[in-house]
Length: 211
Image (cartoon, rainbow, N blue to C red; front, side):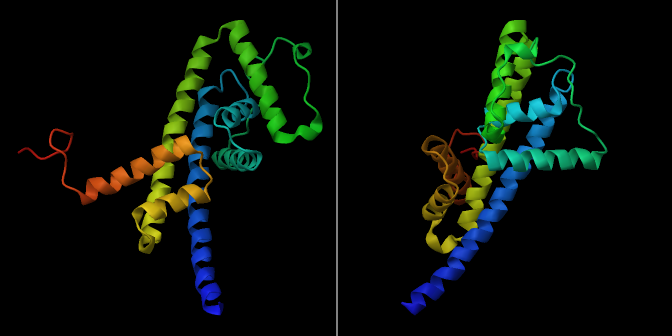
């Protein structure tokens, strides 16, 4: 029993360390894309509103949202930029159109409220260009995050190679509690990356050698 406990502790520690590296990669990805969104809509939305929309659309939990917002502010500070509190146009025509969320709802409540305001503004003013830009930015962020997850899964495969490829990739997905549909995409793309290196190319596919 003692030997089992001693052997499990380093393994769990390595899992924790590797998970921390992977979480940092995801956080850095979020920060890059939220800053890109802030820049993209700076002519129409203030910093806080752009961040809140990003949080809502990317479905970040409160802890993730706080970390992303804090890192984004720090990055702007390093640039010597002070985020504006006012966009070119307000989110709604008047404050009477929106009922304020209770203060104890925290960041999630604020994000929900801001996104509701944003949707009303988009519909009411037919801001098709703004909506189009945000949709494109969100799609780009989602796809880049999938790639970051794939890279993380490959990090787990490399770190825990004694487990086997499939098991290590599954360990990453379980550790990060990734929902099933997205997890399938990440798993398949990670194994596809390994297959491209380990297997002969498929004839007729891009990169395949001519016969």
